[in-house]
Image 1 (cartoon, helix red, strand yellow):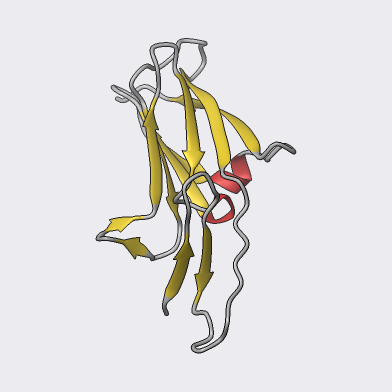
Image 2 (spheres, rainbow, N blue to C red; image 1 turned 90 degrees about the vertical axis):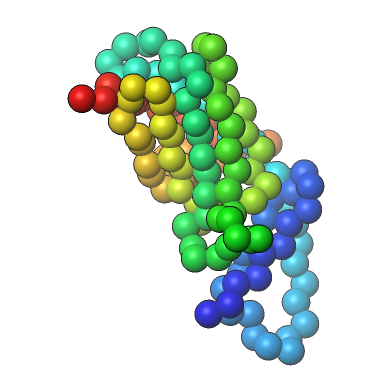
Length: 130
């Protein structure tokens, strides 16, 4: 079925599956969610610099040949901040990959909760690659 994906800069996206043809839709966009966090080596407090934090829509929608996703790399201290403007929080997965570490994948809504200011924090621990 078809998907409707509504976005605007600074706002959280809305994704609707198979809206009724010919029906008038009113879509209210809320401010974007800010996901911040840190990526560390499992079992230690060692930061993982340069890890990729990728948050993608779990559905089968595509935009311009690519998936609906937001992405950022961690800083030297393993920290990141990502504004979610493409992938809706309640239907997204987070994938974290670091140099010489195994990837981490989870449903975002199962991992974090939003605070009143539409912010969420996550600490991800990656295992060393074998």
